[in-house]
Length: 466
Image (cartoon, rainbow, N blue to C red; front, side):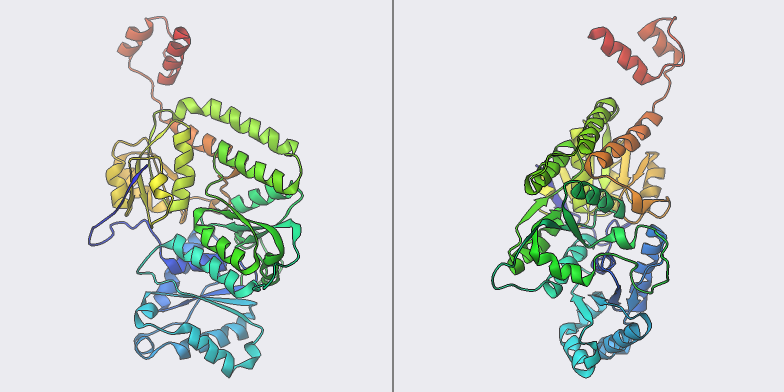
């Protein structure tokens, strides 16, 4: 059990967290034909746009209502109406997703009321899907905005059934948390489909932000789950919620359409992957495919190969709660110790995290806890901290702007966990140094080869004792 604390500093120093509207915008990007809009100033949208472009290295659809000082005081009805009409004229989207920002939340804009007036004034917008989510950036964090948006999409597009609808047993809904990359979603799709199931992911970033080159340019999202697919989610046999953040969305879907759900708080690690695969086998009525059995064996072998390099290592992690839980719990299972755990917002998982303390804070807090660490794990803004402390950095989460392939990182399932072991284990191996000559003479005499490493020495000692 961890003691959960919140930083009481007057300001954030080198912030770790990102805002709710940015999280909401990312969720909308997993919906096909969607145009995300931030209801606020142009600067708020520009920041989010740059962040996503640097991370995904793709064209990002993101618009703004361009609120200025006068509009902020008088209200944003005209700005919202103009933004919607311009977007429809130029982009012809299937869905417009609107996230509020701090400036409009402080004013108290009644956006739901504005949207009713806009539809009344423009009957031609009757078939346009418009989803508004309240995401003030002066509270909560990226994960919260993402989760709220997924829940609101379900409430807007999934019909509310008075009696349970006819089920399609082979169809399953997958509510994918923001800690999953497009590569993770592709991996989960392969696993689920290997049991003969038909998954519908919400949101589906693997269809829109996986780095593919489209045949034709589109100003909206390049792919993702369609509005029609979302409407059919109420007829699925099961809902799989990946990440504690998706619990609210799964409950909302269950209330609207009586779809039962199973929540998996992480899919990184042997035990958690086993539970997921066993559940898929149960609901599909099929045995576990040989391919997955072989991947499990490869993971077990990788754990055996890597555990010596992980044992006793001291790691500091800064990440969103679900990502912190997923990766940190697995590292502890591998024998490492988390000496610093810093996150962005509250979560029921934090008290269960396998560390003495979890702090809701910033990267300065992480730096203070990582002084004696063997590895720092956080996003690219932690690179200066790693340089100052002379500690290796494993880039984790979003944004990751100084490395290629961020969207294709995979840390879920047997293959993803195996690859994570290799990536981190190789960092630990690269830290090994040759001992000084006097240490050689004391431990092995003068006849031992001078090229052996410290870990080679330790292995010789272990084998001798055995």
